[in-house]
Image 1 (spheres, rainbow over the protein chains, first blue to last red):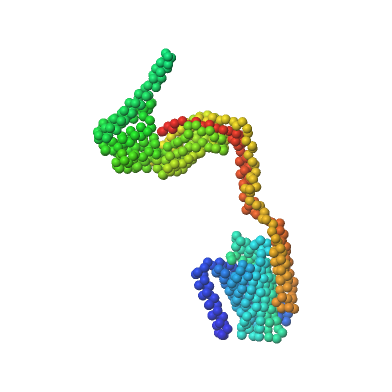
Image 2 (cartoon, chains in turn purple, brown):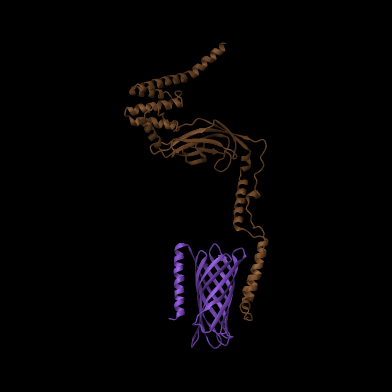
Length: 208
Length: 347
Protein backbone atom coordinates (compact mmCIF):
# COMPACT_ATOMS: atom_id res chain seq x y z
CA UNK A 1 0.00 0.00 0.00
CA UNK A 2 1.51 3.28 -1.08
CA UNK A 3 1.73 6.36 1.06
CA UNK A 4 -0.84 8.12 -1.13
CA UNK A 5 -3.37 5.33 -0.78
CA UNK A 6 -2.91 5.34 2.97
CA UNK A 7 -3.52 9.07 3.05
CA UNK A 8 -6.61 8.70 0.89
CA UNK A 9 -8.00 6.01 3.18
CA UNK A 10 -7.37 8.19 6.21
CA UNK A 11 -9.14 11.09 4.53
CA UNK A 12 -12.14 8.88 3.69
CA UNK A 13 -12.30 7.62 7.27
CA UNK A 14 -12.20 11.19 8.49
CA UNK A 15 -15.04 12.18 6.16
CA UNK A 16 -17.07 9.13 7.17
CA UNK A 17 -16.66 9.82 10.88
CA UNK A 18 -17.54 13.47 10.36
CA UNK A 19 -20.67 12.43 8.44
CA UNK A 20 -21.72 10.04 11.18
CA UNK A 21 -21.21 12.72 13.78
CA UNK A 22 -23.24 15.26 11.81
CA UNK A 23 -25.99 12.74 11.12
CA UNK A 24 -26.47 12.29 14.83
CA UNK A 25 -26.98 16.04 15.30
CA UNK A 26 -28.90 17.39 12.32
CA UNK A 27 -31.54 16.00 9.96
CA UNK A 28 -30.14 14.26 6.93
CA UNK A 29 -31.48 14.62 3.39
CA UNK A 30 -30.44 11.96 0.97
CA UNK A 31 -30.31 12.20 -2.79
CA UNK A 32 -29.62 9.68 -5.52
CA UNK A 33 -28.88 10.40 -9.16
CA UNK A 34 -28.42 8.09 -12.13
CA UNK A 35 -26.98 9.39 -15.34
CA UNK A 36 -25.65 8.46 -18.71
CA UNK A 37 -23.12 10.44 -20.65
CA UNK A 38 -21.80 10.42 -24.16
CA UNK A 39 -18.11 11.13 -23.88
CA UNK A 40 -15.26 11.96 -26.20
CA UNK A 41 -11.69 11.66 -25.01
CA UNK A 42 -8.69 12.98 -26.83
CA UNK A 43 -5.12 12.25 -25.76
CA UNK A 44 -5.35 8.76 -24.30
CA UNK A 45 -4.54 7.17 -27.60
CA UNK A 46 -3.58 8.57 -30.93
CA UNK A 47 -7.19 8.80 -32.11
CA UNK A 48 -10.32 10.32 -30.63
CA UNK A 49 -12.01 7.83 -28.29
CA UNK A 50 -15.75 7.94 -27.85
CA UNK A 51 -18.18 6.00 -25.74
CA UNK A 52 -20.98 6.03 -23.23
CA UNK A 53 -20.55 6.10 -19.48
CA UNK A 54 -23.23 5.02 -17.04
CA UNK A 55 -23.13 5.76 -13.38
CA UNK A 56 -24.60 7.57 -10.48
CA UNK A 57 -24.12 9.84 -7.57
CA UNK A 58 -25.30 9.52 -4.00
CA UNK A 59 -25.35 12.38 -1.57
CA UNK A 60 -26.22 13.15 2.00
CA UNK A 61 -26.91 16.70 3.08
CA UNK A 62 -26.47 17.86 6.66
CA UNK A 63 -27.61 21.45 6.83
CA UNK A 64 -25.25 23.42 4.57
CA UNK A 65 -22.82 20.51 4.15
CA UNK A 66 -23.26 17.96 1.40
CA UNK A 67 -21.18 14.83 1.15
CA UNK A 68 -21.31 12.94 -2.10
CA UNK A 69 -19.86 9.92 -3.83
CA UNK A 70 -19.88 9.41 -7.57
CA UNK A 71 -19.01 6.60 -9.91
CA UNK A 72 -19.36 5.95 -13.61
CA UNK A 73 -17.83 3.62 -16.13
CA UNK A 74 -17.99 2.65 -19.76
CA UNK A 75 -16.03 1.37 -22.72
CA UNK A 76 -14.59 3.72 -25.29
CA UNK A 77 -13.73 3.09 -28.91
CA UNK A 78 -10.96 4.74 -30.85
CA UNK A 79 -10.96 2.55 -33.95
CA UNK A 80 -8.18 0.21 -32.87
CA UNK A 81 -8.37 -0.16 -29.07
CA UNK A 82 -11.22 -0.33 -26.61
CA UNK A 83 -10.09 1.29 -23.38
CA UNK A 84 -12.37 0.86 -20.39
CA UNK A 85 -12.89 4.07 -18.45
CA UNK A 86 -13.70 4.17 -14.75
CA UNK A 87 -14.23 7.40 -12.83
CA UNK A 88 -15.02 7.99 -9.21
CA UNK A 89 -14.83 10.66 -6.62
CA UNK A 90 -15.85 11.90 -3.24
CA UNK A 91 -16.59 15.46 -2.29
CA UNK A 92 -17.59 17.62 0.60
CA UNK A 93 -19.40 20.79 -0.43
CA UNK A 94 -20.53 23.69 1.70
CA UNK A 95 -23.47 25.79 0.58
CA UNK A 96 -22.33 29.31 1.34
CA UNK A 97 -25.51 30.90 -0.02
CA UNK A 98 -28.49 29.56 -1.96
CA UNK A 99 -26.67 30.30 -5.18
CA UNK A 100 -23.08 29.32 -4.44
CA UNK A 101 -21.27 26.31 -2.98
CA UNK A 102 -17.62 25.42 -2.63
CA UNK A 103 -16.15 22.00 -2.12
CA UNK A 104 -13.14 19.76 -1.99
CA UNK A 105 -12.61 16.10 -2.69
CA UNK A 106 -10.52 13.40 -4.27
CA UNK A 107 -11.16 12.30 -7.84
CA UNK A 108 -9.83 9.28 -9.65
CA UNK A 109 -9.90 8.16 -13.25
CA UNK A 110 -8.47 5.02 -14.77
CA UNK A 111 -8.17 3.85 -18.36
CA UNK A 112 -7.81 0.09 -18.59
CA UNK A 113 -6.05 -0.80 -21.80
CA UNK A 114 -5.23 -4.24 -23.05
CA UNK A 115 -1.71 -4.07 -21.74
CA UNK A 116 -1.80 -1.49 -19.00
CA UNK A 117 -3.85 0.80 -16.81
CA UNK A 118 -3.48 4.55 -16.75
CA UNK A 119 -4.45 6.05 -13.40
CA UNK A 120 -5.03 9.70 -12.63
CA UNK A 121 -5.76 10.72 -9.04
CA UNK A 122 -6.06 14.26 -7.84
CA UNK A 123 -7.61 16.35 -5.13
CA UNK A 124 -9.95 18.93 -6.63
CA UNK A 125 -11.26 22.17 -5.27
CA UNK A 126 -14.45 23.35 -6.88
CA UNK A 127 -17.01 26.09 -6.92
CA UNK A 128 -20.56 25.92 -8.18
CA UNK A 129 -23.17 28.56 -8.78
CA UNK A 130 -26.84 28.09 -9.59
CA UNK A 131 -29.58 30.45 -10.71
CA UNK A 132 -33.27 30.10 -11.53
CA UNK A 133 -34.45 30.46 -15.08
CA UNK A 134 -38.21 29.82 -14.94
CA UNK A 135 -39.66 30.29 -11.48
CA UNK A 136 -37.64 28.07 -9.19
CA UNK A 137 -38.42 24.86 -11.05
CA UNK A 138 -36.04 25.31 -13.96
CA UNK A 139 -32.52 26.19 -12.95
CA UNK A 140 -29.12 26.38 -14.51
CA UNK A 141 -25.85 25.73 -12.79
CA UNK A 142 -22.17 26.06 -13.53
CA UNK A 143 -19.42 24.15 -11.71
CA UNK A 144 -15.73 24.66 -12.18
CA UNK A 145 -13.00 22.61 -10.58
CA UNK A 146 -9.28 22.53 -10.52
CA UNK A 147 -6.82 20.17 -8.97
CA UNK A 148 -5.05 21.38 -5.85
CA UNK A 149 -2.86 18.27 -5.60
CA UNK A 150 -2.09 15.33 -7.81
CA UNK A 151 -1.11 11.85 -6.78
CA UNK A 152 2.46 10.73 -7.07
CA UNK A 153 1.11 7.52 -8.54
CA UNK A 154 -0.26 9.48 -11.51
CA UNK A 155 2.99 9.77 -13.34
CA UNK A 156 3.77 13.24 -14.68
CA UNK A 157 0.18 14.50 -14.14
CA UNK A 158 0.57 18.16 -13.31
CA UNK A 159 -2.88 19.65 -13.27
CA UNK A 160 -6.52 18.87 -13.97
CA UNK A 161 -9.15 21.54 -14.61
CA UNK A 162 -12.72 21.14 -15.69
CA UNK A 163 -16.19 22.46 -15.73
CA UNK A 164 -19.81 21.54 -16.10
CA UNK A 165 -22.80 23.59 -17.22
CA UNK A 166 -26.28 22.18 -16.76
CA UNK A 167 -29.95 22.92 -16.90
CA UNK A 168 -32.47 21.01 -14.82
CA UNK A 169 -36.09 20.75 -13.89
CA UNK A 170 -36.59 20.32 -10.14
CA UNK A 171 -39.99 19.26 -8.84
CA UNK A 172 -40.48 20.87 -5.45
CA UNK A 173 -43.42 18.66 -4.46
CA UNK A 174 -42.25 15.26 -5.62
CA UNK A 175 -38.56 15.88 -4.98
CA UNK A 176 -37.24 14.56 -8.26
CA UNK A 177 -35.29 16.19 -10.98
CA UNK A 178 -33.89 15.73 -14.45
CA UNK A 179 -30.80 17.48 -15.65
CA UNK A 180 -28.93 17.94 -18.93
CA UNK A 181 -25.29 19.01 -18.72
CA UNK A 182 -22.19 19.45 -20.76
CA UNK A 183 -18.81 18.71 -19.20
CA UNK A 184 -15.24 19.35 -20.12
CA UNK A 185 -11.99 18.68 -18.38
CA UNK A 186 -8.36 18.95 -19.31
CA UNK A 187 -5.60 16.92 -17.66
CA UNK A 188 -2.18 18.39 -18.26
CA UNK A 189 0.95 16.30 -18.02
CA UNK A 190 4.56 17.22 -17.98
CA UNK A 191 5.44 18.41 -21.39
CA UNK A 192 2.86 19.38 -23.98
CA UNK A 193 0.61 16.34 -23.44
CA UNK A 194 -3.04 16.81 -22.54
CA UNK A 195 -5.98 14.54 -22.07
CA UNK A 196 -9.26 16.27 -22.79
CA UNK A 197 -12.65 14.87 -22.09
CA UNK A 198 -15.91 16.26 -23.46
CA UNK A 199 -19.26 14.96 -22.34
CA UNK A 200 -22.98 15.44 -22.66
CA UNK A 201 -24.88 13.84 -19.79
CA UNK A 202 -28.52 13.30 -18.99
CA UNK A 203 -29.45 12.41 -15.43
CA UNK A 204 -32.45 11.94 -13.18
CA UNK A 205 -32.54 11.95 -9.44
CA UNK A 206 -34.70 11.83 -6.37
CA UNK A 207 -34.32 13.38 -2.97
CA UNK A 208 -32.18 16.36 -2.18
CA UNK B 1 -125.15 49.12 36.90
CA UNK B 2 -127.13 45.93 36.65
CA UNK B 3 -125.05 45.01 33.66
CA UNK B 4 -121.83 45.53 35.60
CA UNK B 5 -123.04 43.23 38.38
CA UNK B 6 -124.00 40.60 35.86
CA UNK B 7 -120.59 40.76 34.21
CA UNK B 8 -118.83 40.45 37.57
CA UNK B 9 -120.96 37.50 38.54
CA UNK B 10 -120.27 35.84 35.22
CA UNK B 11 -116.53 36.45 35.61
CA UNK B 12 -116.50 34.99 39.08
CA UNK B 13 -118.47 32.01 37.87
CA UNK B 14 -115.99 31.33 35.11
CA UNK B 15 -112.78 32.18 36.93
CA UNK B 16 -113.77 31.22 40.39
CA UNK B 17 -113.02 27.53 40.48
CA UNK B 18 -109.41 27.81 39.23
CA UNK B 19 -108.73 30.75 41.52
CA UNK B 20 -110.17 28.88 44.44
CA UNK B 21 -108.20 25.77 43.59
CA UNK B 22 -105.01 27.84 43.40
CA UNK B 23 -105.77 29.43 46.73
CA UNK B 24 -106.41 26.05 48.33
CA UNK B 25 -103.22 24.64 46.81
CA UNK B 26 -101.18 27.51 48.19
CA UNK B 27 -102.70 26.97 51.64
CA UNK B 28 -101.91 23.28 51.45
CA UNK B 29 -98.35 24.10 50.40
CA UNK B 30 -97.89 26.52 53.30
CA UNK B 31 -99.24 23.98 55.78
CA UNK B 32 -97.05 21.28 54.31
CA UNK B 33 -93.96 23.43 54.67
CA UNK B 34 -94.93 24.23 58.24
CA UNK B 35 -95.40 20.54 59.02
CA UNK B 36 -91.97 19.80 57.50
CA UNK B 37 -90.38 22.47 59.65
CA UNK B 38 -91.98 20.85 62.74
CA UNK B 39 -90.61 17.52 61.56
CA UNK B 40 -94.12 16.14 61.18
CA UNK B 41 -92.93 14.40 58.04
CA UNK B 42 -95.95 12.16 57.34
CA UNK B 43 -98.31 15.13 57.60
CA UNK B 44 -95.97 17.24 55.46
CA UNK B 45 -95.90 14.61 52.72
CA UNK B 46 -99.71 14.31 52.69
CA UNK B 47 -100.22 18.09 52.52
CA UNK B 48 -97.59 18.66 49.85
CA UNK B 49 -98.96 15.85 47.69
CA UNK B 50 -102.43 17.31 48.06
CA UNK B 51 -101.19 20.74 46.96
CA UNK B 52 -99.55 19.24 43.90
CA UNK B 53 -102.54 17.07 43.09
CA UNK B 54 -104.69 20.16 42.50
CA UNK B 55 -102.18 21.66 40.07
CA UNK B 56 -103.58 20.39 36.72
CA UNK B 57 -106.30 22.77 35.65
CA UNK B 58 -105.34 25.80 37.68
CA UNK B 59 -103.41 24.94 40.88
CA UNK B 60 -99.84 26.01 41.68
CA UNK B 61 -97.65 28.02 39.40
CA UNK B 62 -94.35 26.48 38.28
CA UNK B 63 -92.33 28.22 41.00
CA UNK B 64 -94.70 27.00 43.71
CA UNK B 65 -94.71 23.50 42.26
CA UNK B 66 -90.91 23.45 42.43
CA UNK B 67 -91.04 24.64 46.04
CA UNK B 68 -93.60 22.00 46.96
CA UNK B 69 -91.62 19.27 45.26
CA UNK B 70 -88.40 20.31 47.01
CA UNK B 71 -90.01 20.06 50.44
CA UNK B 72 -91.72 16.85 49.39
CA UNK B 73 -88.41 15.33 48.29
CA UNK B 74 -86.71 16.42 51.50
CA UNK B 75 -89.51 14.99 53.66
CA UNK B 76 -89.45 11.69 51.76
CA UNK B 77 -85.70 11.53 52.18
CA UNK B 78 -85.99 11.91 55.93
CA UNK B 79 -88.71 9.28 55.93
CA UNK B 80 -86.06 7.07 54.26
CA UNK B 81 -88.22 6.85 51.12
CA UNK B 82 -85.35 7.77 48.87
CA UNK B 83 -87.05 6.51 45.70
CA UNK B 84 -89.93 8.87 46.31
CA UNK B 85 -87.47 11.67 47.01
CA UNK B 86 -85.68 10.99 43.72
CA UNK B 87 -88.99 10.99 41.86
CA UNK B 88 -89.88 14.39 43.31
CA UNK B 89 -86.49 15.79 42.36
CA UNK B 90 -86.80 14.42 38.83
CA UNK B 91 -90.08 16.30 38.46
CA UNK B 92 -88.32 19.48 39.58
CA UNK B 93 -85.59 19.05 36.96
CA UNK B 94 -88.19 18.54 34.26
CA UNK B 95 -90.00 21.71 35.34
CA UNK B 96 -86.96 23.92 35.80
CA UNK B 97 -83.53 22.52 34.87
CA UNK B 98 -81.82 25.58 36.28
CA UNK B 99 -83.25 25.17 39.75
CA UNK B 100 -80.98 24.32 42.69
CA UNK B 101 -82.25 23.86 46.29
CA UNK B 102 -81.21 26.66 48.61
CA UNK B 103 -78.29 25.35 50.64
CA UNK B 104 -79.12 27.68 53.50
CA UNK B 105 -82.58 26.10 53.82
CA UNK B 106 -81.97 22.45 53.03
CA UNK B 107 -79.25 20.30 54.62
CA UNK B 108 -76.43 18.72 52.58
CA UNK B 109 -78.17 15.32 52.38
CA UNK B 110 -80.97 16.94 50.40
CA UNK B 111 -78.80 19.06 48.12
CA UNK B 112 -76.41 16.19 47.44
CA UNK B 113 -79.21 13.80 46.51
CA UNK B 114 -80.65 16.52 44.27
CA UNK B 115 -77.26 16.92 42.56
CA UNK B 116 -77.07 13.17 41.99
CA UNK B 117 -80.53 13.07 40.48
CA UNK B 118 -79.75 16.09 38.32
CA UNK B 119 -76.69 14.42 36.85
CA UNK B 120 -78.59 11.18 36.24
CA UNK B 121 -81.64 12.92 34.75
CA UNK B 122 -80.51 15.49 32.23
CA UNK B 123 -83.15 17.96 31.21
CA UNK B 124 -83.33 21.00 29.03
CA UNK B 125 -85.51 24.04 29.61
CA UNK B 126 -86.68 26.01 26.61
CA UNK B 127 -86.98 29.78 26.69
CA UNK B 128 -88.48 31.49 23.69
CA UNK B 129 -90.02 34.93 23.28
CA UNK B 130 -93.83 34.84 23.04
CA UNK B 131 -93.78 36.86 19.81
CA UNK B 132 -90.83 37.27 17.44
CA UNK B 133 -90.84 39.06 14.09
CA UNK B 134 -87.92 38.52 11.79
CA UNK B 135 -86.92 38.51 8.15
CA UNK B 136 -86.75 34.96 6.80
CA UNK B 137 -83.25 33.69 6.05
CA UNK B 138 -81.58 36.97 7.00
CA UNK B 139 -82.64 36.92 10.65
CA UNK B 140 -83.60 34.27 13.17
CA UNK B 141 -85.98 33.27 15.86
CA UNK B 142 -83.84 32.68 18.94
CA UNK B 143 -84.43 29.66 21.15
CA UNK B 144 -82.54 29.57 24.44
CA UNK B 145 -81.84 26.14 25.89
CA UNK B 146 -80.81 25.75 29.50
CA UNK B 147 -79.24 22.46 30.54
CA UNK B 148 -79.50 20.83 33.92
CA UNK B 149 -75.90 19.66 33.69
CA UNK B 150 -72.84 20.57 31.66
CA UNK B 151 -73.02 17.25 29.82
CA UNK B 152 -76.64 17.62 28.84
CA UNK B 153 -77.28 16.95 25.15
CA UNK B 154 -80.36 17.90 23.16
CA UNK B 155 -81.83 17.74 19.71
CA UNK B 156 -83.99 20.64 18.55
CA UNK B 157 -86.38 20.36 15.63
CA UNK B 158 -89.11 22.36 14.03
CA UNK B 159 -91.99 20.07 13.12
CA UNK B 160 -95.31 20.51 11.50
CA UNK B 161 -98.32 20.19 13.73
CA UNK B 162 -98.76 16.62 12.48
CA UNK B 163 -95.22 15.72 13.55
CA UNK B 164 -93.57 15.89 10.11
CA UNK B 165 -90.00 17.17 10.36
CA UNK B 166 -89.50 20.64 8.88
CA UNK B 167 -85.96 21.42 9.95
CA UNK B 168 -83.47 20.09 12.46
CA UNK B 169 -81.90 23.06 14.19
CA UNK B 170 -79.46 21.54 16.65
CA UNK B 171 -78.07 18.25 17.86
CA UNK B 172 -75.35 18.48 20.44
CA UNK B 173 -74.24 19.47 23.89
CA UNK B 174 -76.28 22.14 25.60
CA UNK B 175 -73.97 22.58 28.58
CA UNK B 176 -75.20 25.35 30.82
CA UNK B 177 -76.98 27.04 27.95
CA UNK B 178 -76.99 27.41 24.22
CA UNK B 179 -78.82 29.65 21.79
CA UNK B 180 -80.30 28.06 18.69
CA UNK B 181 -81.56 30.11 15.77
CA UNK B 182 -84.24 29.33 13.22
CA UNK B 183 -84.27 31.48 10.10
CA UNK B 184 -87.78 30.45 9.13
CA UNK B 185 -86.62 28.07 6.41
CA UNK B 186 -87.28 24.39 5.95
CA UNK B 187 -84.51 21.87 5.42
CA UNK B 188 -84.74 22.42 1.63
CA UNK B 189 -84.01 26.11 2.00
CA UNK B 190 -87.46 27.61 1.49
CA UNK B 191 -89.39 29.81 3.87
CA UNK B 192 -92.09 27.74 5.55
CA UNK B 193 -95.71 28.60 4.79
CA UNK B 194 -97.84 30.18 7.47
CA UNK B 195 -99.44 27.71 9.86
CA UNK B 196 -99.10 25.77 13.06
CA UNK B 197 -95.78 24.19 13.91
CA UNK B 198 -94.06 23.00 17.02
CA UNK B 199 -90.55 23.21 18.36
CA UNK B 200 -89.52 19.83 19.73
CA UNK B 201 -86.63 19.69 22.18
CA UNK B 202 -85.46 16.17 22.96
CA UNK B 203 -83.11 15.74 25.89
CA UNK B 204 -80.78 12.88 25.05
CA UNK B 205 -78.96 10.54 27.34
CA UNK B 206 -81.24 9.98 30.26
CA UNK B 207 -80.55 6.32 30.95
CA UNK B 208 -83.24 6.00 33.57
CA UNK B 209 -86.19 7.58 31.83
CA UNK B 210 -85.24 7.49 28.17
CA UNK B 211 -85.27 10.63 26.08
CA UNK B 212 -87.27 13.51 27.44
CA UNK B 213 -89.23 15.57 24.96
CA UNK B 214 -90.59 19.08 25.40
CA UNK B 215 -92.79 20.68 22.78
CA UNK B 216 -93.46 24.36 22.21
CA UNK B 217 -96.35 25.21 19.87
CA UNK B 218 -95.48 27.79 17.24
CA UNK B 219 -97.84 29.78 15.09
CA UNK B 220 -96.12 31.18 12.01
CA UNK B 221 -97.51 34.17 10.15
CA UNK B 222 -95.97 35.60 6.98
CA UNK B 223 -96.03 39.13 5.70
CA UNK B 224 -94.77 40.02 2.24
CA UNK B 225 -92.45 43.01 2.04
CA UNK B 226 -93.84 46.05 0.28
CA UNK B 227 -90.66 46.58 -1.68
CA UNK B 228 -88.77 43.71 -3.16
CA UNK B 229 -85.21 43.36 -2.12
CA UNK B 230 -82.71 43.40 -4.98
CA UNK B 231 -82.00 40.04 -6.52
CA UNK B 232 -79.15 38.08 -5.04
CA UNK B 233 -75.78 38.75 -6.59
CA UNK B 234 -74.76 35.87 -8.82
CA UNK B 235 -71.02 36.47 -8.86
CA UNK B 236 -68.85 37.14 -5.84
CA UNK B 237 -67.28 40.57 -5.55
CA UNK B 238 -63.69 40.93 -6.71
CA UNK B 239 -62.58 41.51 -3.13
CA UNK B 240 -63.38 37.86 -2.37
CA UNK B 241 -61.53 36.46 -5.36
CA UNK B 242 -57.89 35.47 -5.30
CA UNK B 243 -55.54 36.62 -8.04
CA UNK B 244 -55.50 34.07 -10.85
CA UNK B 245 -52.24 35.25 -12.38
CA UNK B 246 -49.10 36.40 -10.70
CA UNK B 247 -48.28 40.03 -11.07
CA UNK B 248 -45.94 40.60 -13.98
CA UNK B 249 -42.47 41.51 -12.86
CA UNK B 250 -39.06 42.07 -14.24
CA UNK B 251 -37.95 39.17 -16.34
CA UNK B 252 -34.52 40.57 -16.99
CA UNK B 253 -32.74 38.39 -14.39
CA UNK B 254 -34.00 35.25 -16.12
CA UNK B 255 -32.94 36.58 -19.50
CA UNK B 256 -29.52 37.53 -18.17
CA UNK B 257 -28.99 34.19 -16.46
CA UNK B 258 -30.13 32.35 -19.59
CA UNK B 259 -27.80 34.34 -21.81
CA UNK B 260 -24.91 33.96 -19.38
CA UNK B 261 -25.47 30.24 -18.94
CA UNK B 262 -25.73 29.70 -22.69
CA UNK B 263 -22.50 31.59 -23.23
CA UNK B 264 -20.62 29.67 -20.55
CA UNK B 265 -21.87 26.34 -21.89
CA UNK B 266 -20.77 27.26 -25.39
CA UNK B 267 -17.40 28.57 -24.30
CA UNK B 268 -16.64 26.07 -21.53
CA UNK B 269 -13.75 24.25 -23.14
CA UNK B 270 -12.16 27.47 -24.34
CA UNK B 271 -12.63 29.06 -20.93
CA UNK B 272 -10.83 26.22 -19.17
CA UNK B 273 -8.13 25.71 -21.67
CA UNK B 274 -7.89 28.25 -24.48
CA UNK B 275 -7.48 26.55 -27.77
CA UNK B 276 -9.34 23.40 -26.87
CA UNK B 277 -12.50 22.87 -28.81
CA UNK B 278 -14.08 19.67 -29.89
CA UNK B 279 -17.54 18.72 -30.94
CA UNK B 280 -20.75 20.64 -31.01
CA UNK B 281 -22.81 18.72 -28.45
CA UNK B 282 -22.33 21.31 -25.76
CA UNK B 283 -24.45 23.65 -27.88
CA UNK B 284 -27.45 21.45 -27.04
CA UNK B 285 -27.12 22.57 -23.45
CA UNK B 286 -26.28 26.10 -24.50
CA UNK B 287 -29.45 26.41 -26.60
CA UNK B 288 -31.55 24.80 -23.87
CA UNK B 289 -30.35 27.29 -21.28
CA UNK B 290 -30.80 30.25 -23.59
CA UNK B 291 -34.30 29.17 -24.57
CA UNK B 292 -35.26 28.62 -20.95
CA UNK B 293 -33.93 32.05 -20.04
CA UNK B 294 -36.02 33.62 -22.81
CA UNK B 295 -39.09 31.70 -21.72
CA UNK B 296 -38.46 32.70 -18.10
CA UNK B 297 -38.20 36.32 -19.21
CA UNK B 298 -41.59 36.17 -20.95
CA UNK B 299 -43.13 34.17 -18.10
CA UNK B 300 -42.08 36.74 -15.55
CA UNK B 301 -43.04 39.75 -17.64
CA UNK B 302 -46.59 38.67 -18.33
CA UNK B 303 -47.24 36.90 -15.09
CA UNK B 304 -48.34 33.31 -14.96
CA UNK B 305 -51.41 31.34 -14.04
CA UNK B 306 -51.86 30.30 -10.40
CA UNK B 307 -53.74 26.98 -10.58
CA UNK B 308 -54.55 26.79 -6.86
CA UNK B 309 -56.14 30.24 -6.90
CA UNK B 310 -58.05 29.46 -10.09
CA UNK B 311 -59.53 26.35 -8.48
CA UNK B 312 -60.47 28.24 -5.30
CA UNK B 313 -62.17 31.00 -7.30
CA UNK B 314 -64.10 28.50 -9.40
CA UNK B 315 -65.43 26.85 -6.26
CA UNK B 316 -66.41 30.23 -4.80
CA UNK B 317 -68.20 31.26 -8.00
CA UNK B 318 -70.07 27.96 -8.03
CA UNK B 319 -71.22 28.43 -4.45
CA UNK B 320 -72.48 31.93 -5.23
CA UNK B 321 -74.27 30.75 -8.34
CA UNK B 322 -75.94 27.91 -6.43
CA UNK B 323 -77.02 30.25 -3.69
CA UNK B 324 -78.38 32.83 -6.08
CA UNK B 325 -80.08 30.17 -8.14
CA UNK B 326 -81.88 28.49 -5.24
CA UNK B 327 -85.57 28.26 -6.18
CA UNK B 328 -86.90 30.24 -3.26
CA UNK B 329 -84.06 32.60 -2.54
CA UNK B 330 -85.70 35.60 -4.11
CA UNK B 331 -88.99 35.07 -2.31
CA UNK B 332 -87.25 34.29 0.98
CA UNK B 333 -85.68 37.71 0.89
CA UNK B 334 -89.11 39.22 0.71
CA UNK B 335 -90.72 37.37 3.59
CA UNK B 336 -91.08 38.70 7.07
CA UNK B 337 -92.31 36.20 9.64
CA UNK B 338 -94.00 36.54 12.97
CA UNK B 339 -93.76 33.50 15.22
CA UNK B 340 -95.97 33.21 18.28
CA UNK B 341 -94.73 30.67 20.79
CA UNK B 342 -96.90 28.90 23.34
CA UNK B 343 -95.97 27.25 26.61
CA UNK B 344 -93.71 24.23 26.61
CA UNK B 345 -95.37 20.93 27.36
CA UNK B 346 -93.50 17.99 28.79
CA UNK B 347 -93.72 14.33 27.94
